Length: 418
Image (tube, rainbow, N blue to C red; front, side):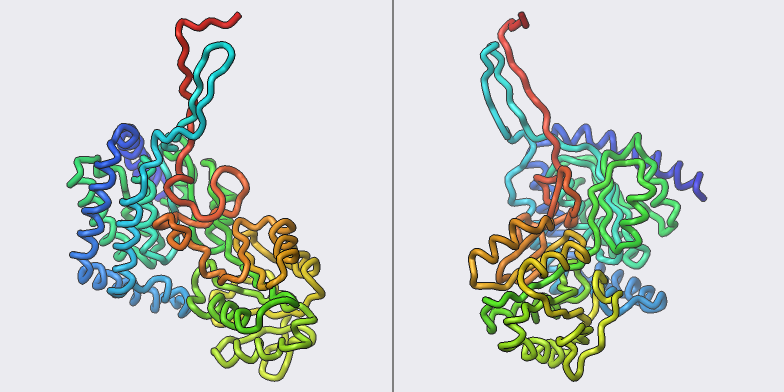
C-alpha cells in the first residue's frame, strides 16, 4: 500500500508542480473568475453537497465521533452559504502576487525591489471540517499556489463534492484543473507519502488535533506551517467590567465548542473573584458548561479539577477554571499550559492590558474580545488555511498573503561591481 500511495503521490505531485508554473503566470482576473464560478457552483450544488455530507455524518457516528467533532463535520444550508461567502471574499481580495513589498536604490546604481511570489505547491492535511477544502483551495489559488488536499476520512464525501465545484471554477477560467487536487483515498498511507514528497510539495499545512499535528511534525521531510491545538485562555483581570466579562467568557466557550478558538481555561484574578467571581462560574454552569475548578473556584456544582485539566483542549462544553494573583500569575500559567494559539485578557486597565500583550508571545492576543474571533474570516482575510502557531514565516491566521514568499528583482544599467 505504501508503494501504491507513493506512486499516486508522484503522479499528483508532478501534475501539481506543472500546474504551479501556470498559476505563477496566471492573471489576477483569471483567478478571481475561477473563485467566483466556484462560489456559484457550490451554491447551485448545495443539495448534492448536503447529501454527500449526510453520508459523512453517518460514517462519523459509526466511528464514534464526539458531538463537537460531528458539529465540525456537519454542513447545512447556512454553513454552505458561509463557504460561498468565503469564496467570494477571497475572490474580491487584491491579488498578492507581484506586490512590491519594498523598493530602493543603492549607491552602486542598482534598483532593488522585493516582490511577492507564490511558494509553489502547498500540501494541506486536515481533519473533519469539509469547509477547509474550499478555504484552502481558494487561498492557495489566490496566492498562485497549486494545492494538494488530503481531507479526513470523516469528510471524504463532503470534501469531494466541494472539490468538484472548485475544479469547475478552474475549468471555466481556463486554469489547469490540477491546480487544486484532492487525494482520492482514505488510506492513511497517503499522508505518509505527502510528508515525504520533497520533490513535489514545498510546504505542508496540518489542520487538526494534536495527534495529527504531532505526526506531521515528527515525520515530515517537507517544511511545516504548524497549526497546534487551541488551548485558549481567558484572563479576567481585577479591572474587568463584569457585564463584558460574562458575555465574552460565555461566547468564548459556548458559541462553538469544537473550534480551535474555543476557550478551554478561564483564569480569574483574586480581587475580581472576591467581588463577583462566583457569578461568572454560575453563569457558565447555567449555560450548560461543566466547570473543572481548582481551589476557591470549586464552588457548589463544579467538578474538582485535576492536573490534566490544565493544558487540555476539551473541544466540548467543559472549561477549566482557576483563581490567580494578578496578571503576572496569569501569564505564568498561560506560558506553562498554553499552546501559543490565542489568549485573551478582560480588563479596563490599559497598563495591565499592555503588560499582557508584551509579556505573552501567543500568535493572537486579544483584549475584551472573544477568542472565537481567532479566524481568518473575522480578520478580513476572507478565509484561512489554519492558525499557524510557529514563529517563522506565517503566524496566526494564514490567508492568501501569508501563503506567499518573495524574491528580489534587481535592475542595473550595465552596472559592474568595483
